[in-house]
Length: 581
DNA sequence: GCCGTTTTCGGCCCGACTGTTTTCAGTCG
Image 1 (cartoon, helix red, strand yellow):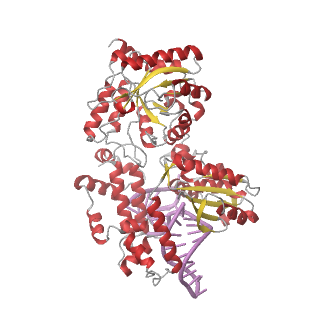
Image 2: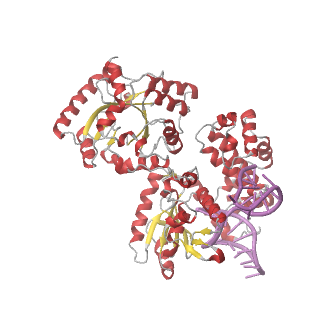
């Protein structure tokens, strides 16, 4: 069982316990344990074996015992017991907006409702309104929520939601009443997927109603879920939910911190505040007798608990508070640190633009170097290059370099397929003519974990690979990562001095936060690349940088922040090896 | 279930909105 499997069990356990009036704090403890296990930097099972699991904060005796049981038997006796007592469909009902544990339990016990379909039927037949706290309006809202649940089922890619957030912010900023505005929540923390868009506005008290009114009437809004004086919720025309909060300017910093989250980070910060006799809420920092001590700027929140400012991307309660307290917060990489882009395609294979057009865009963006890495021959559906075509492209690149005088410097590269047996698609006699070799898996995603791991490790150990492309192969919302022991892969990369890619393409963002930290801790360089198939894709670099920041990466961890000469020196060993092959 | 410069017991973040209440529970973030 990997960390995600174990986390899932604890999430389910917490959900089921909620139906059975188990002490709320116990449920929360399981849920927080699930979240922590999901994000552990190494396999939970290894930590259990080594006895280090219990050292993790908020993982105690009870959780360790259950993890051991899980490893031994594959399940938990108490989970099986609860599953027998609560029908499986209740978990889905719990995800309907407006249905919490108490209401779900109520409709189950009173009306025997155990599925979303049954809930919908009961609402339509007006059979819910007899229950306490259920009325005609609640039935109506539930029907709408069920429809929304079926439509939206889940989360949006950050790269889908972010432009919406930008557009809404741009429009509201034009209102004279709006003093400050920013998107918070998962958008500001740059998580790869977001459930909704959180907007925060600062305005004078007397203007709050007017701002809320303007917001719910924006042209993008399809329907209004809630419309209060300080809080509104709407759905946009494409289904995404937007929450707007309105606060007075003196509360801006406190609210910005509060609505940026994460929830776990906020709880930890508030816990520190409580110990200092302070109260922090979205309106400010308060001392004895509720005396207001600050909250206009976000920095004041951290200062109140004795910490330096913590970047939003780090706020997941994954050690950032301890790091801040000890003065060892990372100096996160920024987009302007990026000097080159080392993965892109042209219309020689499956790209949409010519070599010249791609390089022209890189020049416009001020890149110092770019690597042209078209597909290799094995990827026939993308018209992969054989040695002859690759050499012809190389001559074109040489000519372009002469013409542009090295602004940017264009590197001859390839994205070579890693074949089923772990060999690299092109031989050393061809690869030695190149400046940059990316190797990627594009087939046989379903191999068993051990085999997939062996395959990728073998490709790295060939010694000809500069960078492993999109190491997990996931496509957000479409394809799960392939089963692979990433720690073993990273260890192989470290041994042979290869980099791993952070693929900035919106569907991929692969690697992501947990892996990036693992790579950093193991000393494996990361390359942030756009995998561009068209000139405008090069703008996706920002998504890659955001993801890198979530992985605590500093410029020194990212190889393409290096000047070209140093980059070449760092990977020269592959090319020396090739020359002698 | 977890945790401890106030504690091995007794706390555990906090406020807005809604619908149904005749004073508030449930839900959400």
